[in-house]
Picture 1 (cartoon, one colour):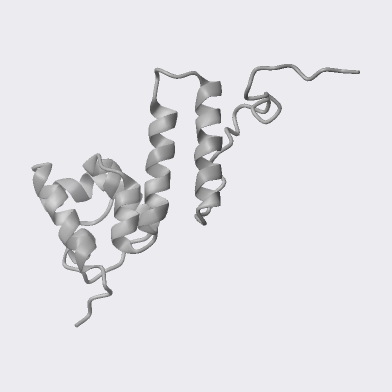
Picture 2 (cartoon, helix red, strand yellow; picture 1 turned 180 degrees about the vertical axis):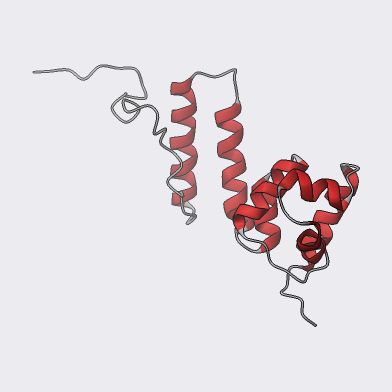
Length: 142
């Protein structure tokens, strides 16, 4: 009756907690939330904020995006895009420049197919990434 359409989230959290072999109290302590509050989330009586979901994900060692989708905060299509970006950025076998090129290509394909880019294709830590030609060729001056 009092469910806020978060039953799937609560059931999923309970499954993840049990898989991690954590008691309700242990997960609550690890995530920095109260035991009764976590119990209400698991029973579908409370809808946690994105911040609480992130804390729970960290404590369970799972993707916060997965919990966001379960809670209806994030669309599954957006999650798929984030997972691809995360995989590219986490790959240690390719250079930073190669990562940026892959992210740009991926973003352009998503845009072409009608999916938002989400503004995650540029590396904010590399101010020269935009000015670096992807072919490695230098511009010629007349």
